[in-house]
Image 1 (cartoon, protein in one colour):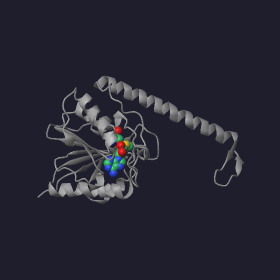
Image 2 (spheres, helix red, strand yellow):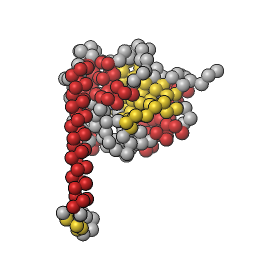
Image 3 (tube, protein in one colour):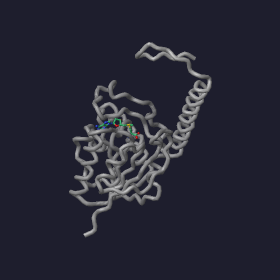
Image 4 (cartoon, rainbow, N blue to C red):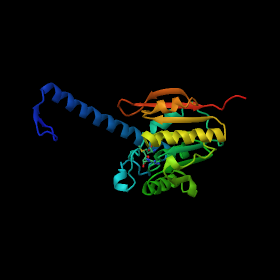
Amino acid sequence: MRLTDPGTGLSSQVSPAVRLKTRLGGLLARSRWRFWRHVDLLIERISGLRSLDTERRAMLDDLGVAAPGRLNYQPSRYISLRRGLRGAHVTSDDVFLDYGCGKGRVLAQAARGYPFGRVLGVEISAELAEVARANLVRARSGARVADDDVVVADAASWPLPDDVTYVYMYRPFTGKVFETVIGRIIESLERRPRRLTLIYVYPELEEVILRTGRFTRARTFRSAERSVHHRVSVFVSEPARP
Ligand SMILES: C[S@@+](CC[C@H](N)C(=O)[O-])C[C@H]1O[C@@H](n2cnc3c(N)ncnc32)[C@H](O)[C@@H]1O
């Protein structure tokens, strides 16, 4: 096989071993994707979330809201929240927030499967937020969704409501935006000290969270996707003892 470098125009010969490895890698990635898609379909069926349309990816460029630090829409695997909340004692006093809720897959899952008192999403794209609202209504079997349940805002300039006790993040943003959002969480904990659980899927920036000194990593497990950061980390912040 001859590969051409688009920059230099130079071409190079690829050995059969590399070719085989590339092909096998691609095959494995596709089978893994198919496997997890089937797991998701099964979970949707079991949990009564079959009517949702959340699978297709969306680019922020196409939605007109791209900016440095903002990451594109791609849905979570259901297994991430399921395992992230394993052993948690969720009650109606708890409030769940998905930062960058996209089309609302995780919001719907949280609303349908757990006794949260409230489920909130913040999303930079009005178009995706609209889909999230519709999906949340479906997950609640037609029950009304309040206007401020799915907020269209830049998470970096949106103050975290002080009753939120569970935060979920699946690669919504990176860089300065991520740091600012973590700062907003700390501000909220200072305004109203409380226990807060942060489920971070693909935790490439977990150092930023740990550096605040306000969170401990309670556990980490492998996520569905295979990559360098193919993990989900669960952090907990406890209020300081008097
Ligand atoms: C990888 S998707 C995750 C979607 C959803 N949370 C899930 O797990 O299925 C990341 C989402 O974050 C949103 N996003 C990116 N930057 C944002 C920002 N600054 N404020 C709010 N949402 C943002 C994107 O539009 C996208 O929908």
